[in-house]
Image (cartoon, rainbow, N blue to C red; front, side, top):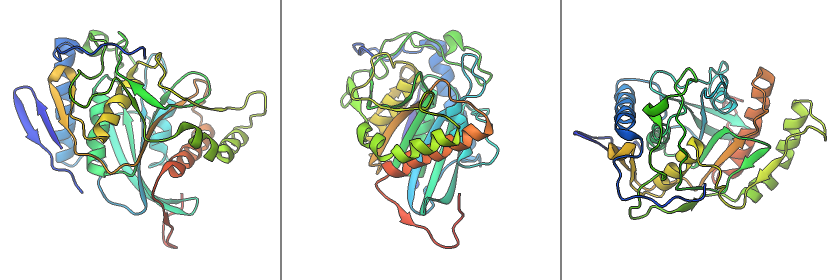
Amino acid sequence: MVYYMRNFVFALLPLLATCGTPSSDTLTDLGAQGNIQVAKRFEKYVNARKNGLDGCNASGSGARIVVSGFGSFQGTLRNISGLVAESIVTDAPAGTAGNYGIKASQREFVFNGKLITVCAIVLEVQWDLAAAGVLFEIDKFAPDTVIMTGLGLEGIRIESGAINNTTNLSGYDESGSASGDKNRPISSWVLSSEQGVEDSIRFLWNPEKIASQNRAALAALNSSLGLNSVNAFSILPQTAPNPKNNYICNNIAFVVQHGLKGVPVSLAGGNLVINPPPNRARTSGFLHFPKNALTTPLSINAWREFILNVATAASSKTSSAQPSSLEF
Protein backbone atom coordinates (compact mmCIF):
# COMPACT_ATOMS: atom_id res chain seq x y z
CA MET A 1 0.00 0.00 0.00
CA VAL A 2 1.31 3.46 -0.83
CA TYR A 3 0.50 6.55 1.22
CA TYR A 4 0.99 10.00 -0.27
CA MET A 5 1.19 12.97 2.05
CA ARG A 6 1.58 16.57 1.02
CA ASN A 7 5.23 17.54 0.65
CA PHE A 8 6.48 13.99 1.12
CA VAL A 9 5.85 10.45 -0.06
CA PHE A 10 6.58 7.11 1.55
CA ALA A 11 5.64 3.58 0.61
CA LEU A 12 4.71 0.55 2.71
CA LEU A 13 4.73 -2.85 1.09
CA PRO A 14 1.88 -5.11 2.21
CA LEU A 15 2.85 -8.10 4.27
CA LEU A 16 1.44 -10.87 2.78
CA ALA A 17 -26.82 9.85 5.33
CA THR A 18 -29.11 11.86 2.40
CA CYS A 19 -26.16 11.74 0.11
CA GLY A 20 -24.37 15.01 -0.40
CA THR A 21 -23.01 15.83 -3.83
CA PRO A 22 -19.24 15.29 -3.79
CA SER A 23 -17.16 18.34 -4.63
CA SER A 24 -14.22 18.30 -7.01
CA ASP A 25 -12.24 20.29 -4.44
CA THR A 26 -10.45 17.87 -2.14
CA LEU A 27 -8.58 20.51 -0.17
CA THR A 28 -11.20 21.71 2.28
CA ASP A 29 -12.90 18.67 3.79
CA LEU A 30 -11.48 19.08 7.32
CA GLY A 31 -10.15 22.59 6.92
CA ALA A 32 -6.49 23.53 6.65
CA GLN A 33 -5.65 22.85 10.30
CA GLY A 34 -7.64 19.64 10.55
CA ASN A 35 -6.25 18.19 7.33
CA ILE A 36 -2.64 18.71 8.39
CA GLN A 37 -3.26 17.34 11.88
CA VAL A 38 -4.75 14.10 10.58
CA ALA A 39 -1.93 13.59 8.08
CA LYS A 40 0.75 14.23 10.71
CA ARG A 41 -0.85 11.94 13.29
CA PHE A 42 -1.17 9.15 10.78
CA GLU A 43 2.47 9.64 9.74
CA LYS A 44 3.49 9.30 13.40
CA TYR A 45 1.49 6.09 13.72
CA VAL A 46 3.04 4.58 10.60
CA ASN A 47 6.53 5.49 11.77
CA ALA A 48 5.84 4.05 15.22
CA ARG A 49 4.67 0.79 13.64
CA LYS A 50 7.88 0.69 11.61
CA ASN A 51 9.82 1.08 14.84
CA GLY A 52 8.17 -1.74 16.77
CA LEU A 53 4.79 -0.47 17.94
CA ASP A 54 2.41 -3.38 18.43
CA GLY A 55 -0.04 -4.02 15.60
CA CYS A 56 -1.37 -6.74 13.33
CA ASN A 57 0.42 -8.85 10.73
CA ALA A 58 -0.47 -11.51 8.20
CA SER A 59 0.04 -14.49 10.47
CA GLY A 60 -2.14 -16.88 12.38
CA SER A 61 -4.27 -19.86 11.45
CA GLY A 62 -7.88 -20.16 10.43
CA ALA A 63 -10.02 -17.20 9.49
CA ARG A 64 -8.34 -13.85 9.98
CA ILE A 65 -10.89 -11.38 11.31
CA VAL A 66 -10.64 -7.63 11.96
CA VAL A 67 -12.85 -6.22 14.72
CA SER A 68 -12.65 -2.46 15.25
CA GLY A 69 -14.26 -0.19 17.83
CA PHE A 70 -13.99 3.35 19.17
CA GLY A 71 -12.77 5.10 22.30
CA SER A 72 -14.27 7.97 24.31
CA PHE A 73 -16.55 10.64 22.88
CA GLN A 74 -19.17 13.17 23.99
CA GLY A 75 -19.11 12.23 27.66
CA THR A 76 -18.99 8.50 26.94
CA LEU A 77 -15.72 7.75 28.68
CA ARG A 78 -16.03 3.98 28.24
CA ASN A 79 -17.23 3.09 24.76
CA ILE A 80 -18.58 -0.45 24.57
CA SER A 81 -17.36 -0.87 20.98
CA GLY A 82 -13.70 -0.23 21.79
CA LEU A 83 -13.83 -2.20 25.02
CA VAL A 84 -15.33 -5.26 23.34
CA ALA A 85 -12.91 -5.16 20.42
CA GLU A 86 -9.91 -4.96 22.73
CA SER A 87 -11.31 -7.61 25.09
CA ILE A 88 -10.84 -10.15 22.29
CA VAL A 89 -7.06 -9.82 22.52
CA THR A 90 -6.52 -8.95 26.20
CA ASP A 91 -8.12 -9.78 29.53
CA ALA A 92 -7.82 -6.16 30.69
CA PRO A 93 -9.23 -3.93 27.94
CA ALA A 94 -8.78 -0.19 28.39
CA GLY A 95 -10.86 0.70 25.33
CA THR A 96 -8.52 3.56 24.50
CA ALA A 97 -6.69 4.29 21.25
CA GLY A 98 -3.34 5.31 22.71
CA ASN A 99 -1.01 8.15 21.81
CA TYR A 100 -1.50 7.88 18.06
CA GLY A 101 -5.28 7.60 17.94
CA ILE A 102 -4.98 4.04 16.61
CA LYS A 103 -4.16 0.92 18.63
CA ALA A 104 -4.05 -2.60 17.19
CA SER A 105 -3.05 -6.06 18.33
CA GLN A 106 -3.94 -9.63 17.44
CA ARG A 107 -4.57 -13.01 19.00
CA GLU A 108 -4.96 -16.55 17.71
CA PHE A 109 -7.36 -18.79 19.61
CA VAL A 110 -10.17 -21.31 19.38
CA PHE A 111 -13.75 -20.11 19.44
CA ASN A 112 -16.67 -22.56 19.23
CA GLY A 113 -14.30 -25.24 18.01
CA LYS A 114 -12.84 -23.11 15.23
CA LEU A 115 -9.32 -21.76 15.09
CA ILE A 116 -9.32 -18.04 14.26
CA THR A 117 -6.98 -15.05 14.46
CA VAL A 118 -8.45 -11.67 15.38
CA CYS A 119 -6.92 -8.25 14.79
CA ALA A 120 -8.57 -5.88 17.28
CA ILE A 121 -8.36 -2.15 16.56
CA VAL A 122 -9.38 0.64 18.93
CA LEU A 123 -9.76 4.05 17.31
CA GLU A 124 -9.99 7.62 18.47
CA VAL A 125 -13.24 9.24 17.32
CA GLN A 126 -11.51 11.28 14.63
CA TRP A 127 -12.62 11.96 11.08
CA ASP A 128 -10.35 10.31 8.48
CA LEU A 129 -7.67 9.24 11.00
CA ALA A 130 -9.78 6.28 12.14
CA ALA A 131 -10.47 5.18 8.57
CA ALA A 132 -6.79 5.44 7.61
CA GLY A 133 -5.83 3.39 10.66
CA VAL A 134 -8.17 0.54 9.78
CA LEU A 135 -6.98 0.46 6.16
CA PHE A 136 -3.37 0.38 7.36
CA GLU A 137 -3.99 -2.62 9.62
CA ILE A 138 -6.08 -4.37 6.97
CA ASP A 139 -3.13 -4.07 4.60
CA LYS A 140 -0.80 -5.59 7.20
CA PHE A 141 -3.19 -8.30 8.41
CA ALA A 142 -4.80 -9.43 5.12
CA PRO A 143 -8.12 -10.45 6.73
CA ASP A 144 -10.89 -12.67 5.42
CA THR A 145 -13.51 -10.72 7.36
CA VAL A 146 -13.76 -7.10 8.54
CA ILE A 147 -16.29 -6.19 11.24
CA MET A 148 -16.35 -2.50 12.22
CA THR A 149 -18.37 -1.48 15.28
CA GLY A 150 -19.54 1.66 17.03
CA LEU A 151 -22.09 2.96 19.52
CA GLY A 152 -25.54 3.58 18.08
CA LEU A 153 -29.08 4.11 19.33
CA GLU A 154 -31.68 1.41 19.92
CA GLY A 155 -31.08 -2.26 19.26
CA ILE A 156 -28.20 -4.07 17.59
CA ARG A 157 -28.06 -2.57 14.11
CA ILE A 158 -26.50 -4.68 11.38
CA GLU A 159 -25.82 -1.98 8.80
CA SER A 160 -26.16 -2.69 5.09
CA GLY A 161 -23.89 0.02 3.70
CA ALA A 162 -22.50 3.53 3.96
CA ILE A 163 -23.09 6.85 2.23
CA ASN A 164 -20.96 9.68 0.87
CA ASN A 165 -22.21 12.24 3.35
CA THR A 166 -20.91 13.96 6.48
CA THR A 167 -22.37 16.02 9.27
CA ASN A 168 -20.76 19.22 10.56
CA LEU A 169 -19.82 17.80 13.97
CA SER A 170 -16.31 17.60 15.37
CA GLY A 171 -14.39 14.53 16.35
CA TYR A 172 -13.26 13.77 19.90
CA ASP A 173 -9.80 13.39 21.36
CA GLU A 174 -8.56 10.58 23.57
CA SER A 175 -10.02 12.18 26.71
CA GLY A 176 -13.46 12.37 25.14
CA SER A 177 -13.29 16.14 24.65
CA ALA A 178 -14.57 17.66 21.41
CA SER A 179 -11.80 18.48 18.94
CA GLY A 180 -13.65 21.48 17.53
CA ASP A 181 -12.29 22.81 14.24
CA LYS A 182 -9.19 20.62 14.60
CA ASN A 183 -11.29 17.69 13.38
CA ARG A 184 -14.52 18.80 11.77
CA PRO A 185 -15.62 18.29 8.13
CA ILE A 186 -16.24 21.36 6.03
CA SER A 187 -17.43 19.45 2.97
CA SER A 188 -20.64 17.43 2.91
CA TRP A 189 -18.89 14.43 1.36
CA VAL A 190 -16.63 11.69 2.70
CA LEU A 191 -14.66 11.05 -0.50
CA SER A 192 -14.37 13.33 -3.49
CA SER A 193 -16.05 12.27 -6.71
CA GLU A 194 -13.24 10.30 -8.31
CA GLN A 195 -13.29 7.14 -10.40
CA GLY A 196 -14.62 4.21 -8.40
CA VAL A 197 -16.15 6.29 -5.58
CA GLU A 198 -19.80 5.36 -5.14
CA ASP A 199 -22.48 7.65 -3.75
CA SER A 200 -23.79 4.79 -1.61
CA ILE A 201 -21.78 1.60 -1.11
CA ARG A 202 -23.00 -1.78 0.11
CA PHE A 203 -21.12 -3.90 2.60
CA LEU A 204 -19.98 -7.40 1.76
CA TRP A 205 -22.57 -9.18 3.87
CA ASN A 206 -26.30 -9.78 4.07
CA PRO A 207 -27.72 -8.19 7.27
CA GLU A 208 -30.82 -10.39 7.32
CA LYS A 209 -28.70 -13.52 6.95
CA ILE A 210 -26.37 -12.34 9.72
CA ALA A 211 -29.37 -11.76 11.98
CA SER A 212 -30.80 -15.20 11.18
CA GLN A 213 -27.46 -16.93 11.78
CA ASN A 214 -27.10 -15.33 15.20
CA ARG A 215 -30.46 -15.97 16.84
CA ALA A 216 -28.90 -18.42 19.30
CA ALA A 217 -26.04 -15.99 19.99
CA LEU A 218 -28.59 -13.23 20.70
CA ALA A 219 -30.49 -15.48 23.10
CA ALA A 220 -27.24 -16.33 24.87
CA LEU A 221 -26.35 -12.63 25.10
CA ASN A 222 -29.67 -11.70 26.68
CA SER A 223 -29.49 -14.67 29.03
CA SER A 224 -25.95 -13.77 30.14
CA LEU A 225 -27.11 -10.22 30.88
CA GLY A 226 -30.18 -11.40 32.78
CA LEU A 227 -32.59 -9.75 30.35
CA ASN A 228 -36.14 -10.93 29.71
CA SER A 229 -38.66 -10.50 26.90
CA VAL A 230 -39.45 -6.96 28.09
CA ASN A 231 -35.92 -5.51 28.09
CA ALA A 232 -34.01 -7.94 25.87
CA PHE A 233 -31.82 -6.66 23.07
CA SER A 234 -32.93 -7.34 19.50
CA ILE A 235 -31.07 -7.51 16.20
CA LEU A 236 -32.17 -4.93 13.63
CA PRO A 237 -30.90 -5.89 10.16
CA GLN A 238 -30.89 -2.80 7.94
CA THR A 239 -32.08 -3.08 4.35
CA ALA A 240 -30.49 0.16 3.10
CA PRO A 241 -27.84 2.63 4.29
CA ASN A 242 -29.32 4.97 6.88
CA PRO A 243 -29.26 8.64 5.70
CA LYS A 244 -29.03 9.74 9.35
CA ASN A 245 -25.87 7.72 9.86
CA ASN A 246 -23.42 10.36 8.65
CA TYR A 247 -21.00 10.69 11.53
CA ILE A 248 -17.60 9.04 12.02
CA CYS A 249 -19.01 5.50 12.01
CA ASN A 250 -20.18 6.16 8.47
CA ASN A 251 -16.89 7.90 7.62
CA ILE A 252 -14.82 4.85 8.51
CA ALA A 253 -17.25 2.39 6.91
CA PHE A 254 -17.49 4.31 3.64
CA VAL A 255 -13.72 4.73 3.31
CA VAL A 256 -12.83 1.17 4.33
CA GLN A 257 -15.39 -0.43 2.02
CA HIS A 258 -13.92 1.48 -0.93
CA GLY A 259 -10.42 0.55 0.17
CA LEU A 260 -11.35 -3.14 0.30
CA LYS A 261 -12.31 -2.85 -3.36
CA GLY A 262 -8.95 -1.32 -4.22
CA VAL A 263 -10.34 2.17 -4.82
CA PRO A 264 -7.82 4.95 -4.02
CA VAL A 265 -9.12 7.16 -1.23
CA SER A 266 -8.21 10.81 -0.67
CA LEU A 267 -8.44 11.79 3.00
CA ALA A 268 -7.73 14.92 5.02
CA GLY A 269 -8.22 17.28 2.11
CA GLY A 270 -5.82 15.41 -0.13
CA ASN A 271 -3.05 15.48 2.48
CA LEU A 272 -3.37 11.73 2.89
CA VAL A 273 -4.03 9.54 -0.15
CA ILE A 274 -4.15 5.77 0.23
CA ASN A 275 -3.82 3.47 -2.76
CA PRO A 276 -4.79 0.09 -1.33
CA PRO A 277 -4.52 -3.15 -3.29
CA PRO A 278 -7.78 -5.11 -3.57
CA ASN A 279 -8.07 -7.09 -0.34
CA ARG A 280 -8.90 -10.75 -0.04
CA ALA A 281 -11.67 -10.03 2.50
CA ARG A 282 -14.90 -11.62 1.31
CA THR A 283 -17.01 -10.31 4.17
CA SER A 284 -17.22 -6.82 5.65
CA GLY A 285 -19.77 -4.81 7.54
CA PHE A 286 -20.59 -2.42 10.36
CA LEU A 287 -22.48 -3.20 13.57
CA HIS A 288 -23.85 -0.58 15.94
CA PHE A 289 -24.10 -1.49 19.62
CA PRO A 290 -27.24 -0.26 21.42
CA LYS A 291 -26.75 2.95 23.38
CA ASN A 292 -27.81 1.27 26.64
CA ALA A 293 -25.21 -1.50 26.47
CA LEU A 294 -23.37 -1.48 29.80
CA THR A 295 -19.59 -1.52 30.13
CA THR A 296 -19.32 -3.73 33.20
CA PRO A 297 -16.96 -6.74 32.98
CA LEU A 298 -19.96 -9.08 32.72
CA SER A 299 -21.45 -7.04 29.89
CA ILE A 300 -18.15 -6.76 28.01
CA ASN A 301 -17.66 -10.52 28.19
CA ALA A 302 -21.21 -11.21 26.99
CA TRP A 303 -20.89 -8.78 24.08
CA ARG A 304 -17.49 -10.22 23.19
CA GLU A 305 -19.05 -13.65 22.77
CA PHE A 306 -21.82 -12.18 20.64
CA ILE A 307 -19.45 -10.23 18.37
CA LEU A 308 -17.26 -13.29 17.89
CA ASN A 309 -20.33 -15.31 16.92
CA VAL A 310 -21.27 -12.63 14.37
CA ALA A 311 -17.70 -12.52 13.03
CA THR A 312 -17.27 -16.27 12.69
CA ALA A 313 -20.73 -16.71 11.17
CA ALA A 314 -19.90 -14.00 8.65
CA SER A 315 -16.46 -15.39 7.85
CA SER A 316 -16.05 -17.35 4.64
CA LYS A 317 -13.15 -19.34 6.07
CA THR A 318 -12.83 -21.36 9.26
CA SER A 319 -10.43 -24.07 10.37
CA SER A 320 -10.93 -26.90 12.84
CA ALA A 321 -9.07 -26.39 16.07
CA GLN A 322 -5.92 -28.28 16.95
CA PRO A 323 -5.75 -29.87 20.41
CA SER A 324 -2.90 -27.55 21.47
CA SER A 325 -4.69 -24.37 20.45
CA LEU A 326 -5.60 -21.81 23.08
CA GLU A 327 -9.28 -21.91 23.99
CA PHE A 328 -10.91 -18.53 24.28
